[in-house]
Image 1 (cartoon, one colour):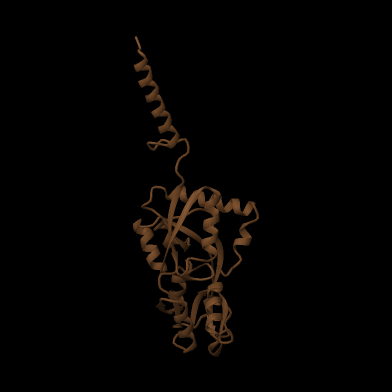
Image 2 (cartoon, helix red, strand yellow):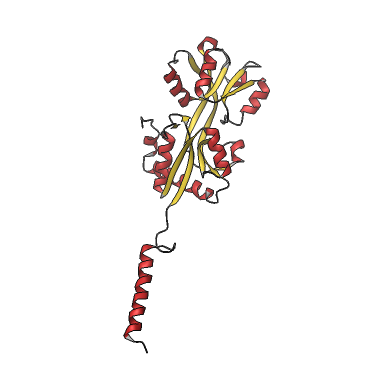
Length: 258
């Protein structure tokens, strides 16, 4: 037979369970915690990503993940370091990565690119050739590229066929300076990125894009060591599609001064 004391104890126990359920202790809650992602962001690829953690890619990724309830934080590092961090699982992913044969082996990709960019062969106007495409490059030409960047699946074939000498450097400024002093015959640079540096260096009258190297779809590359990599890539795809449906995507592609 329950006494008034027993009833009081039962009431207190019930109240405790009610409070635990309301405040979410332990981890079982009516609303689960939001999924989080930490991404490495390149520090020298304006207008897409710069040393201040700003740019088109940052805005696109933040807004796309906001659509699907994923919290994003970024770590600004040199591009090659970001790739290594993602490959080791130190971060969940890295942007801005071209999905090509060399990267598909290393990372998990979604299906919806952040955007598409063009890369061209740039020349000094003082050494401007009369050729009209990359397959006409003089044999033995010296070509400058950024170490660690992707330049399309055709580049190894081009190097072999035209017997090109490839010089790898660490920055766009180095490439442009090598062109200006005639140390290389041409440099492959992404058009919009090259435009930023050419403008900053005041050499618009001296450096010109002549013909295309490739068109590149740019993605976030997710770490294969992260068990949530596929989920994060699918959610990013979903968020990007929502931005397009809402008419916000094109607005986010416009460079700003942020």
